[in-house]
Image (tube, rainbow, N blue to C red; front, side, top):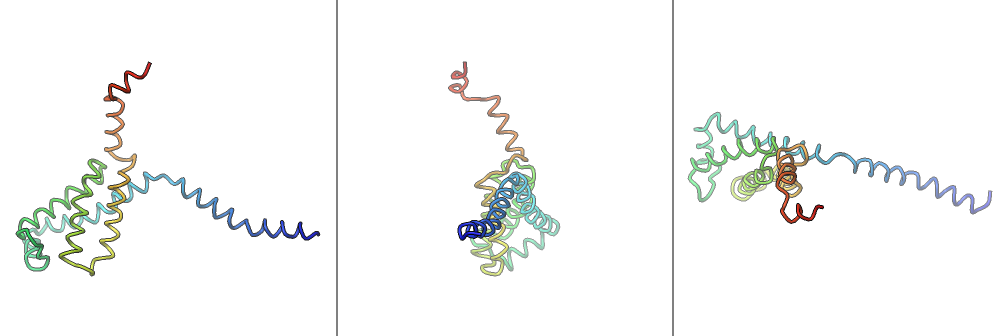
Length: 170
């Protein structure tokens, strides 16, 4: 065997793991994004919805919690408790359905910011960063095709095309 043949044989053997890696990466890249978006919407929605149910189930305790432990600035404890409970019950339902999804992320992101700045700085950081990242992904990338937002957008495009586009078609 000549040195050139040995060299090409070594190159082929060394590139096999790279070919496998590139092939696996490309296969994973074809995984449907809508499944991830649906999972994120449901996952983060469940966290907030369960917290909202707990607050709603014992609202007097929730008010006491906001008054004695959370001590949110600028808002009376009763108002803060009612707002957060409403956000945690309404916004997740919107996330589950994929309806006004991007708008529904905003109160939850605001809640996470308030928790991080005023309520539990440092102690809840890892959870809040994770939930915040998921909410930011949904806010910036949208709910995906398994959502009412997607169906409404398709309907609007189909039935209410701009006059300029409609007249350009022969």
